[in-house]
Length: 553
Image (cartoon, rainbow, N blue to C red; front, top):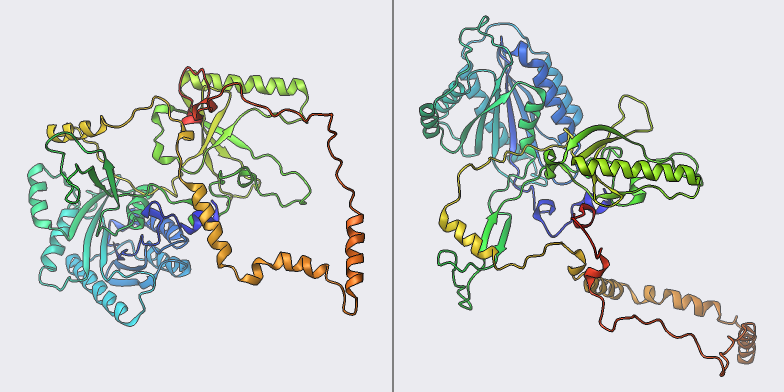
């Protein structure tokens, strides 16, 4: 991505504004490493935490995870990592992972509930001391969230914590989350107490009444990917003090949706208050990985890095097709970046036979993808064959024309968890009538024409250019003109007559332009055959049979 995207200075959406991530809470991770479950979860849990540390410590921009502390419950309670800043502190985080891996996987532990309670209280006291003796830095949140990773039945652990902490000072505790890691195989032969519960609706109702607003329970599958996604929830913007977006629809004509404005007594627009959520982490936030997510903002960005001589042409970028995807099975939220149009080459260095064969093959590919409603998943081929080389993935989308659309696609490492429940119930009739009445007032276009949209960019650039010019010092504005006057200034001791003679000699060296003869008329100006102006829609195809995604997306 460009420096514009890396700075995240967009003033349109607050998702990339400087005011985002200012209320991120500090985090406490309590790992239940007690036997016998620790022997089954040590490898996957340490790998998931390590992968998350790699990512969180390398992200540029605002601090999504300002402070982190790690506790472990084994034979005894241990603080593996006091509160530290996560960004740029990878060495300290990796040492914590090594200590976590070295915990004993066998043994006996008593009073596990008391150790969990003590871990929560110690973390809150540690956070209080840190905030009193350390500058806050780029965050202003005075609360902490505690996450407990355990293989024990989650409801049992949650009741133990709630019973043990009910008389404690939890003023700085924003949330306590118990993550119940479900294992692939049962451990009933080792411990009869480890029986995973499937709560009924009555148990859920009782649990919801008992938990309140500060405690929660989450079931997570015992895999590296699932545990990574559970930890990546910390990277979302947690500032929920106010909604992010107001979506304004035309005023509704129904009595339920029409509310007169207090100022002018006119119907107010239908306002939908929304929150925004990131679906992925931009590769621009990882400046140390230039090969991750090859940029598509311009042709120059997409060219591979070439360390050869500057006067040599760079070798073409290689994209290898790895899979065929059904178009209906590709979610638009996993696509990002600016698209590029792919078409058969017209390079003059190819002979006619090769160029014709290449164009026919490309035409056949577009035809098959269009008829079968397929997408192609392609992967960038890195120039280096080392095991640490990174790959970028793209989607090739067909169109009605002889071209393909190249869009970058999301990968596992940059994916942020996103839980979007699907509603199976119909909306209430009053709300449905309000929205339908509002949408019926909008103009409907069968084909989207971007030439009809004006963003007021040119007046903005004009004002910005004039302000930039007026803010410069007077000497800097006239530097070019003063330099030209200084070069033609005569040396000291010369007379005014010598100056005029030198200027006349300079003018004499320039030949005058020939004038047009009076008997020869100049060429007539080209005029349009129609007297009325051309509509913006004429720049598009006049005869089209179906929508072209290269034009309307």
